[in-house]
Amino acid sequence: MARVVQVKGETPRLEDYLEAIYHLIHDKGYASTLDISDTLKVKPPTVTLTVQKLAAKGYLIYEPYRGMTLTKKGEKTALSVISRHNIISEFLSLIGVEEKVAYEDTEGIEHYIQPITIHKIEKLVDFLRKNPDQLRAIRDYIDD
Image 1 (cartoon, rainbow, N blue to C red):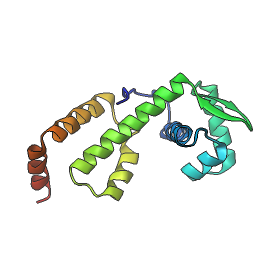
Image 2: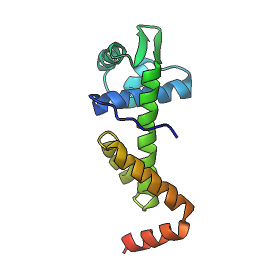
Image 3: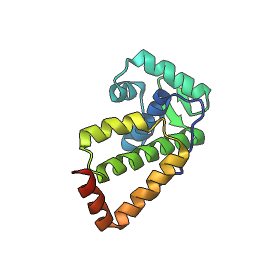
Image 4: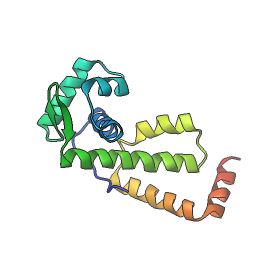
């Protein structure tokens, strides 16, 4: 699992872009502004401006009409966002939160959670995975 880092001064939207770009590059081999537009449901001119902003901040290298690549800083940040997302999502799933609600809550929480909190949730998720009887007892208790 990627080390979770706090991204100081970045907005949740910029983190969403980095996450989307990372997934597109790893799924398709590249990320175009049109792909990002479709993924994030925003207009292509908005994507272009945001991608330029991310490039200026050193998160990616962007060449208009040629594509983009994440820098080490961009990939590290994207992996951190993905890791936070996965930890929160798994935690909510383990405690029995319905999938659609868990997804929406994860999207809301992942950008605002402090590193110490995500670390403790990650440890709890690991414990619950290794102790199914404890997990069952917790789920029985909260489902009442």
